[in-house]
Image (cartoon, rainbow, N blue to C red; front, side, top):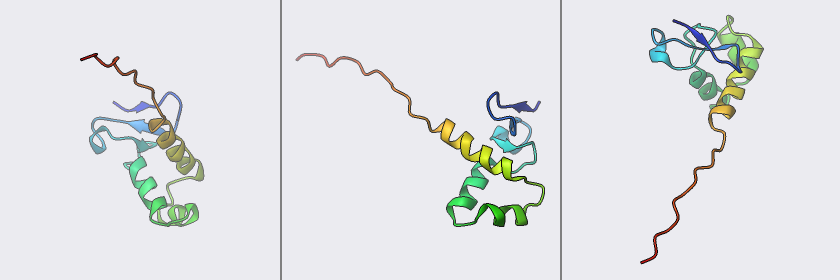
Length: 83
């Protein structure tokens, strides 16, 4: 069963595709792969030439999803116990 992310409509999760990892529009192209290509130096245009089924907005949403997933969260620490 494919689920679209509530905030990023091009990001899908499906336990039967790519082990449930976030993909682009159910295409079996992982968000992590897009990030890896960008971090290796590929430009958005390079990626779009290599995978013509992708659209520019897919790449922007992959970046937005990654930023959302890595968003800082504050975790309260327990008060130190006096010795």
